[in-house]
Image 1: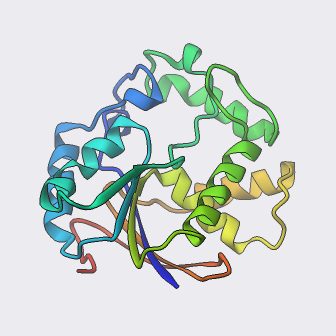
Image 2: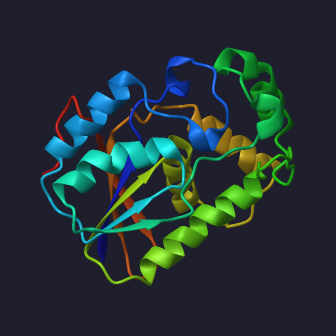
Length: 214
């Protein structure tokens, strides 16, 4: 059994409604930079392994922790956020401007639709994060920190509760209901246990302004 702490990146400019260029390049807000420093101060246990997504906001979030534990092994993994809208049409827009496109996407609920422009389908997203769990199962570590994104953590939760790995319009609609039913705060930690057979067990969500495990 392995301990895996899934950590959502600190507050980004997109989270506070600012216009952004591409999902990969969104930086942290000034408040997010403070959250990242506070997170590093609170995480007292040195992990055996750190995984980060390829997006800038996770790299900035992990920065203070790596300054604290400079010799920890760091690896970029396929745990970046679910980008389902075309980057080209979203470039320079904010959440309010994208809202009609987001609503249309989830109302259609086509798990195999890809909007183009470096986006991915829902089926591809679920397959990607499930593949990451299988990789974790085969790795040798006791405790890993995974710096990732809200929809990734929720996707892993949702996948772990399902009996069938297949995705459909109905299951995608179910994920949307699950995803929108609660929030995972920025810079929060979702402690998880990974069994040898690949099953995930999720504990409580701890926040930087609450009580973190240490």
